[in-house]
Length: 435
Ligand code: NMX
Ligand code: MLT
Image (cartoon, protein in one colour):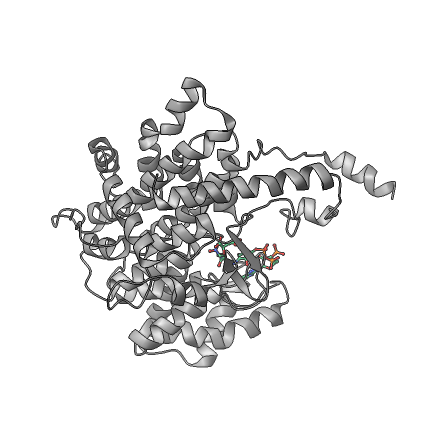
């Protein structure tokens, strides 16, 4: 057994006792109440999921296993000369709650290296898509096509004990994480680098560096990839992509079905696709400006014009956060260091000065501050990934690490099939009358 799997198993044994005790001793304790607005309004704020992988505080932002993003980025081991840590180390941290040593990360890098071969039929699936297809649709299908590789399914058919579900799920999850960057880069090269062909991974490189290499990008794009995959990995359990992955996995569908579903949820403009929407929207402003930087008044006008057309300002607002997203800040700091003179970065910075005030004045959005997507496309654009349809694929590669970690733990703790109750409008009206 690898160090990671062994450590994980010990953690699972300990944690099972906590969950059993909670259920036995306090199963009927009420921890939340539900209002009509919450039922009609997308279940905002209802505490109805449990995960120990990450927690989102509305004012502080995300913590992975209790660590802020700044702590994660400074404490996880790094490659020689790298600014951002190994993505592999994040998987160790999310699964076990422990900061790995460099040796533990190196062992995991070998594990990933041994699992990253992508079967030929996956390239065929990708190649068979028409070139105007959205990269997220291709990614979802490519992951789906891998379903026949599931160890969990084979074991389940052989008669697997519930106590052992986590083990083959771990195998599937680790296999899929190892392959995701290859699939992503292959999609990019197929759609946008025609003629250049696909670069296969370099065995000496870590996941982030290899992704940069396969995309044909020089330094510091290796650090951009590491930063990007790490900050997008998880956002507690209620966001659409994480929740969809968990929901589908709760039926004991394998991780390929679950991650394909996760990708489909992420592909909406109110969720992960907002990162491409930000670029599309900024390009609209840039075209209007004929190359010159807009004044504050011109910027304000563009924002108001968007709102007055009944559209949202992409990259702003959040269902849980009530402050600037720390993922926005991490990327902003990277931009200030590496690309302070970038024209689009200046646009993004100028928007930060005007959008929150306008959203407050409009009075609708509960959170006027920027989220992760307001910054992430600009970084990609700067390093030559100008095909913004591709940005959400990068989000999906990162997000799969957190969602898969959650699914392994769901299985380890025997979480049941998810099945909330619905009511009719008639019933709601009756309940309201009787209060
Ligand atoms: N621009 C304009 N209006 C907004 C915005 C925004 N950025 N954010 C919220 N509102 C509106 C929202 O449409 C709603 O209007 P209405 O009453 O007419 O339906 C009202 O404000 C109240 O919405 P909230 O309760 O503040 O937000 P909610 O929790 O429903 O939605 C988002 C959260 C993220 C979907 C919403 O803020 C939004 O549409 N933002 C822009 C898209 C975006 O950046 N999404 C990415 C989120 C992060 N991610 O990666 O997933
Ligand atoms: C996410 O990263 O999933 C988004 O910020 C959306 C959310 O948390 O609801």
